[in-house]
Amino acid sequence: MSVKFKLGDKEMKNTVKSLIAIAVAAIALTACTAEKQEPVSAPTTTTTTSAQAAPVQPVTETVHVTETQTKVVDPRPVLDDTGLGKLKLGMSYDEAMNTGLLGPNKSPDDKVCSLHDISGGQGAWVYISKRIGVSTITISAAMRTAKGISIGSTVDQLTAAYPDAEKVEAWNTWFVKVAQPKASYRFSAGDGKVNLAQINAAGQDCHS
Image (tube, rainbow, N blue to C red):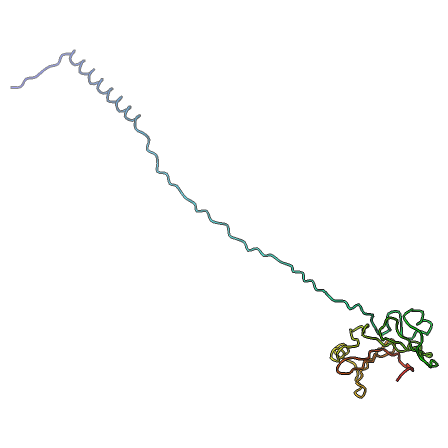
């Protein structure tokens, strides 16, 4: 035997209201739960870039080195192809004496040539020919030629300075010709060293 219950209109209305209230409460509860949930952030990817050093450029540095050389200047008076300072080959007697470089005549017989010391020349002397003027200038160790040869220079130094010198073996003497004016150097040596250095005008007639 089954028992059936029949709800009246009033009970039906109350039941529907209860169901509606339950449904509203469930919706409200769902909304609150959704508000309390924190959003999930997407995973963040961090990219680390390694810093690379800039390439080193080679540097070229030019260093200039200045080398200073000290050249020793020989202060001695110079005998060159034309004469000794103000005293020149071919000068007349008066011209030569007016240079102030010559002492008085030392020759006992001056009919052909006069002989003079060079003042302060320490043994240097000059012949003046009456025919051609100053014909021979002989220097001492206190002077030198333009190429550095003087009394006391070695024969090796002499031949190095004047490689074209012509040697007369019998006299142990070297001659070096000069084109302008016409003249020649004469060097003699003993024991390997120069002991005579002079220049002679062409055609000189004062000595052999």
